[in-house]
Amino acid sequence: MFDLPKYGEGICLARMTDLLDRLAIDRGRLQQRSIAIAGSNGKGSTAAFCASIGRACGLRTGLFTSPHLFRVNERFQIDGVPIDDELLHQLVTRVESAIAAVTKRRAEKFGAFEAMFALACLFFQDNDCDVMVFEAGIGGRYDPIRLLGSRSTTVTSVDYEHVELLGNSLELIVSDKSDACAAGGTIIYGENCRGLRQHIVEYNRNRNVESLFVRDEVSIGNESATAGCHRFDLAFRHHDVRDLDIAMPGGFQLNNAAIAAALVIDWMGRTRPNGPAAQIGAVVRSGLREAHWPGRLETIAQNPLTVIDVGHTPDGIRRSVAGLHGIYGARDWILVAGVSFDKKADEIAGLLAPHFDTIICTSAHHKGGDAAALAAAMRSANPVARIEIAATIEQAFSSSRALAASLKRRIYVAGGLFTAIEFAATARGLDPKQLGFF
Image 1 (tube, rainbow, N blue to C red):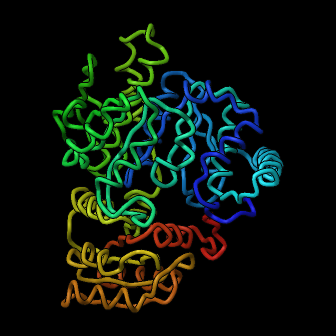
Image 2 (spheres, one colour; image 1 turned 30 degrees about the horizontal axis):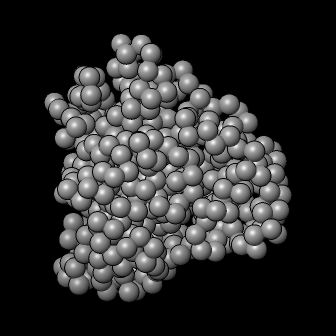
Image 3 (cartoon, rainbow, N blue to C red; image 1 turned 120 degrees about the vertical axis):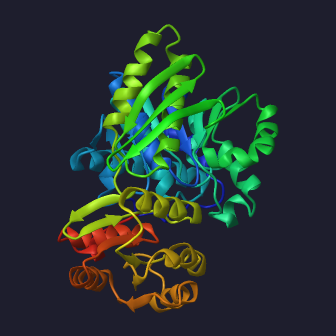
């Protein structure tokens, strides 16, 4: 979409400030109306839950997420509708013009994510969105979302990722992500951050940032699950909302739904303090029920049953496998696995291979790692499994379906975003080589 590298030069905050000013973005309105979503896993689902609750409130709701799965338009949505091609082209032209002017003056190179963030700000401002939900790119300290100045933020989860940028400990990583929140704000931390609570509270204390945690200050109770629904009660501040249900698959979505409900309640308390409190329960219930998000334990075919998951960090993969087993059971699966070349194949194989007795290792067209090396890692993690190699996603698609038919099995596609989405594209009859992920 932009003829720019993925990342710009050095730290982007100063040049991004210039770019937003050049585009006449009202920073005060941006701060008042924005919700910022940071974290290692669960950002997209949490953002989708927040946006759905916003729409249930009757608010014009902007949603900026990354990466997209099939078309770049998916990143920019208002009231659940992606931006159309013509308007996207117009906004790209405006952002490119502003970038050219700032680059000439500052002699610094912008990155594509920075340009997309600016485009989202412009899109939402032009359309007078009442609430704007932004998903972070990487971290929070130097990510463009810090410039939102949002006081209603989350760190959905923390895991080892981008350690060369964020730090090589969970404490450093969660600190970086926490910096997405402006002073005087509130951060809702996901359940897996609770072990870092003492560090987090002290880190945020002098910034006057309130640190709240799922299953502590954000209480979940009366959990139940069926194949198509998770139900729970939520208690947060003076709100007690019963019988919430979500249709997104996977037990890990309870964490994301609880975060989103608490975030929107916090945001509404700041921006609409005199609003009718009695309606909170109804809009949260409706918003969570209607929310959907592709790619996470998504069923893309029924014959054979085929489930994809875009999780690509250790914690994300671990949770997805647990969710798969919780919904469908642990038996009779064929695993199709691929890992990006910049991920640790041994670590991902160790999380996946022990749960599957039939595995096809492949390589995505985009950032795909060595399928043979992944197969060796899978054999090491599960010596008794049947392991095959498919050189391409197209071959993996054909082989897995043939095996599923002969063995009466189901198919699970995991290990990385590009693997899962290219497989889904192939199932749709699309050419996975033609997908543009950034």
